[in-house]
Image (cartoon, rainbow, N blue to C red; front, top):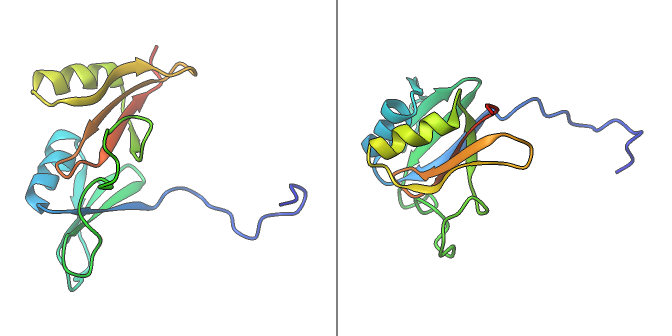
Length: 139
């Protein structure tokens, strides 16, 4: 695409991420009780689900059903890692978040580490195995 020509579409930000889950309550505990998101009203769809607010972004959960995709992480990925499918949330201090997760007995996919650009990142899984990154710009 020619960089001089204006793009016909200008993306502003991620509006929402949709995840298929098995257990809405377990997911609510993870996203609300552990990560501090806020549950928000959801339209009356014909299938189960929940919506959570994280800053300007929402997480839309769809409860697994006969017309949804499968819940969780792609089945063909044998090893979950920071280099596979994941999404990230900015936090104040990813290193402190990693320490808190460990105190709570939550296993990490990848412990807190520094990226080449200086940001700190830590990876964990939600109840359905979706890999979630928490990252911060602290040094």
